[in-house]
Image (cartoon, rainbow, N blue to C red; front, side, top):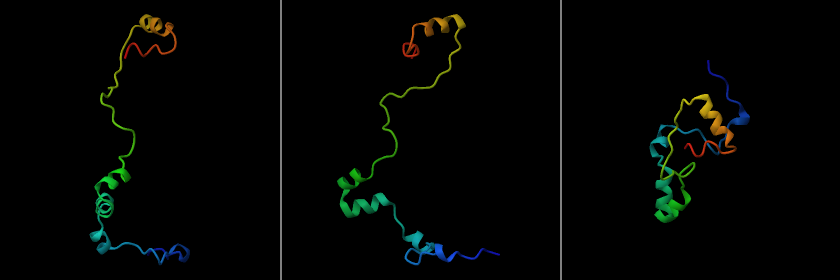
Length: 84
């Protein structure tokens, strides 16, 4: 048995989508480009996240003698920078 719908949560102005609505749906970037033009669409639709760097770094694990590590750490704050 399914649960009864909660009357307070039923939104008659915004009904649930069915197969017909999903079949008619189009991607947002295409709709924006048609309505506002490509240049405006590109300004409105930005890629998510941080911009990609030209040169990316690769994570690496190093096994170093304890004496060597202690010597590097003794150089002070930012001791990892010259290694990388």
